[in-house]
Structures are given as C-alpha cells and as structure tokens.
Length: 361
Image 1 (cartoon, rainbow, N blue to C red):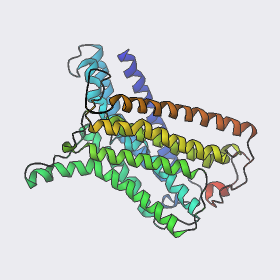
Image 2: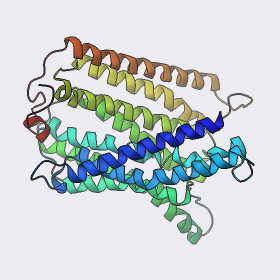
Image 3: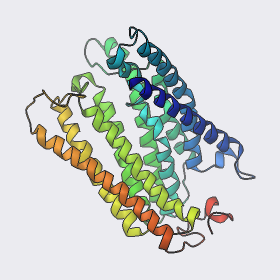
C-alpha cells in the first residue's frame, strides 16, 4: 500500500507540474493584445509566481519520492522504511512550503478589492512585491527542513539563528502583510460598496494570515511547539482559508462563466459558516499545542487541560466544513439550473474580463 501511495503521489505531482507549465506559459504568452505583463491582473500575477515556485519545488519533491519508493520497495535502509518516508517528504506538506500552494488566493483578494472599493489600486507594484515575497518560501526546498529561532546564547548565536529563521518564515509573512496593507489602502482611497463574494474571500485570507502567523510562532524554539498538534492547526487554517477564497472567487467570476448569479445570502452565509468551522477545527489545536498535545498520536498521551473538549471541537469543525462544501456545491447546481441571469457586468467592475465579449452569455 505504501508503494501505491508513493506512486499515486508521484502521478499527482506530475499533474501539478503540467498544470503549472500551462499556467506559467499562458500568463506569459496568451495575454490580450496590447496588455503588458506589468498591466496583467493580480490573479494572473499570483498564478505566474505561484506556478514558477511550483516548477522549482515540485521536481525536488518528485525526486525525493523516487528515492523513497525505490528504498521502500527493496532494502528500506536509507530512508527509514514506512516511518521514515514523511521525515524526508514532510517539508512538502507543512509550512512554509504550503504557502506557495495558496499564493493564488492573495491574487484573488488583490483583484477583488479595487472592485469592491470602487477605486484603482494605487500601489500595484507593492502588491506584486508582496506576492513575490510570499513565494520566497520556495527556498525551503534547498534544505528540505524547517528553520527555527533559538533565542539563547550570545548575540552572535542569536543572529546566526535569526537570519535563516527570518528568510524561511518572516519573508512570506511580510509579503502577506504587504498584500493586506495595499488592499486596505485601496479601500480607504475609494468609496467601498460591499459585494457578496468579498466576504468569504476576505475571511479566507484572514485565516491564511492566522496560519502564517502561527508558523512564525511555532518556529521559535522557546515556544515549545515543535512536534505538537499546533502544526496541524496551522495547516488547517491554511487549507480551509484557501477553500473560502475559492468560494468567493467562484461567486465573483462564476457569472462570467455560466451566466447565472449565485445567491448573495448563500455566498455570505456559507462564507461565515466556513469561517466558524475553520476556527473550530483549528483554534482548539493551537491551544492544545501550547499544552503539548503531541502530533501523530491518537491515544496514550496526557496533559493538563480539557483535551477531550479540544479534540471534540476540532472534529466538529471539520464536519461543519464538510457540510459547507456540500452546501456550496448544491448552491452552484441550483444557480446553474434556475438562478437569476447575470448582467454584462454584475459587479460594475469595469475590468477587462467583464468588458470583452465571451463567457456564457
């Protein structure tokens, strides 16, 4: 079964690489006539830098899988057998590498904010810089490990520990802060008119911020969070936050694709429920992490605190999120079958995708 898992994972990576090549080449070569790369939408920019980062990191992961698969199938000496596989592959499924997987979510927010604010983004260049800084997490593939901050010893020792810690963990955080700050600037410079898709998008990016901040705290040795469920909580924040952003993006651009509007009540309501579900699934494990609940262990552990309550709340959050996803699918199907027809520019965006002929109408 482990061999099949590794083969399936390798095939998934090949598919992701093919998709990344398609995205990268499309943004570079298939822009509309007269549009320079500097004028491309932020969603296109985030897709470009995200695809480039994946093209640099996924081959490293694929090579590691090949080595681990060969070793597991034969002698199981070099990579530690079943238990050792995640030691070598774990960097690809945890922070900060996972930040690369969701950088497109920031592009969605960056594109949607000026539409909601009824104003142009005054600092487009800063947004591009922010998106680029988030993808600096790709340098983690060089060492395939996390870099923590040990704030002990002499000043020189602290500096030696801080530099790689900042490079691997704080630069992506800085990029996210820049994207959020420029979004706030656009809102302040315009006359905002809240649109339904912005609710799940903004909430989702807020959850992603919680994951990035959590990662920065987790990598401080003095916090004592290594090997606890804190890392799982950060990954949940990141994953479910990106799901909420995807829901907002679907509600925003969906009318252009199929010509039907999603219900504003459903878009906002499911966004809020998804936010609550994510907090329920993640926050208890942030707390349990500080109480030293170990990761990857389902029983035979003990610590002071209501461990059963934290586990129950987290399980309930995951269940609620699953219901939200099913409800979102049902909402889309209902809109496709009997929804209200969308106008040419339902958000009064006046941007390229709404001004050219095409789409479902």
